Length: 203
Image 1: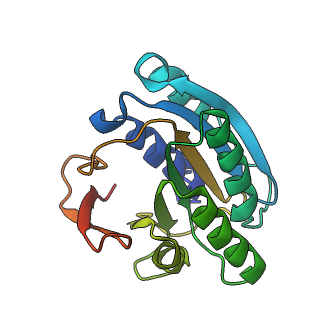
Image 2: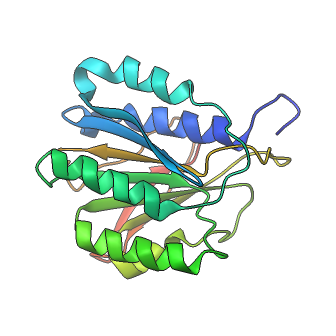
């Protein structure tokens, strides 16, 4: 937690809400899953064009639930079920600190799930300081997912927050999808499936 009371959870929520503002997502239906020790289906898919405010409010209302472990695989299982209920096609955005170093079984299961799901996936690693502090880059390389990282601007984080979010949509956007934020220089967002670079903006 920072001096002004901001936590990593606050930053993750703000980033998720910012993601919803991308014009490339306006034709999506969007659902929300939170994962930590357990995974929860917070919101079934709603049309973003008509429900952006509702979805954003639901994200911002998420609160701390106690110290959590990073069971990403449980979140991915719910995301898979959500996508399957929408016809098995879609796109997945995962926001997390990516800290899977002490969870080899979770890492392996997550690799299997992402390969089985075979949908366009963006792994967004939120961290407290520069450098490679999580395993999302490795996960992306082994599953053909997109990878980007965002650095939480201040140190002194609370330990009490969910480990991450899954945002699932039932429409595919074009190859030029971007995350938008003003007054920052873009950084590469590497697609390990195609070898192409895409861009995001640091918040």
